[in-house]
Length: 102
Figure 1 (cartoon, rainbow, N blue to C red):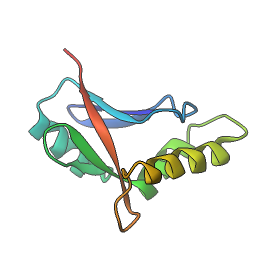
Figure 2 (cartoon, rainbow, N blue to C red):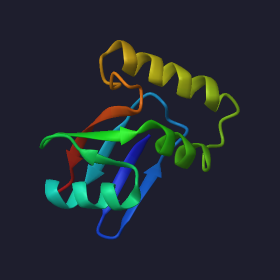
Figure 3 (tube, helix red, strand yellow):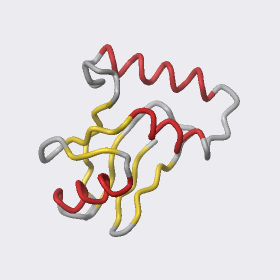
Figure 4 (cartoon, rainbow, N blue to C red):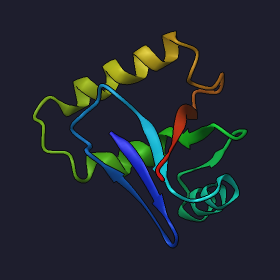
């Protein structure tokens, strides 16, 4: 799964692929931060990572997912992210790397 950020829109794509999570954009980091904030999905945390709101991400991803085992896959992905230290101490956000498209 990845979060695509373009001017005026933030979408969650490939929601059945719960083996990866990133933010993809060709915008400058400050613009990505602004779009993430406007969408309610998160914020940039430095120049290379985003902090995504887990509740909002799950809601948006679940809305387009088609896999019958999606909920189990989501839990597995978040458990992995927690073990890797990518979920905040509050459990409210998950870190995702920003992939710059050119």
